[in-house]
Image (cartoon, rainbow, N blue to C red; front, side, top):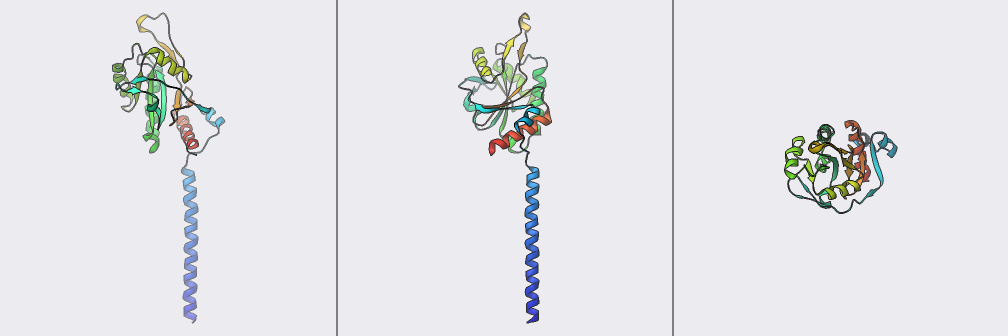
Length: 220
């Protein structure tokens, strides 16, 4: 009887210890998971780090442009994934190649689904010179997955206006003219709406943490 009672007590103690260990492992796993999750930043924190969210994402309307592969660039192109849009041109001497190289670095910093559902698009503000062929020789140089977009001037202008990214040709420079344009990067959400923009000058660490925070907020 005594041996049976002792065995029963031993089993009880063993089960208790196992239960405590399992409970502790669950707590630790939850803590580690929370540590691994991107921290959700406030709007003020995001602005301090160069990311400006629209209070209500904006429908940018209809548009019909063409990409560097000769494929239509339409609202459906922006749906189902996050899109980073930069307005530039291939004859740009400094800001554009610097920004395109930065965006390539940024994409290399992303992980897992972040890479899979993020696309980078350069929209030309110089459609007179930036033909499909010209973009095809320029944009993939920075990253073969990047998309170059051109079209009729008025269509480009309307598209840029919808995204608050004005541009204008610098007068008095003949055929070797430059185009003044914003160096901000526009963020389009998976519904195809104007969601936010990253203000120049861009910082890799700041843009990475704010982009992740925006995505976490979207998934809630």
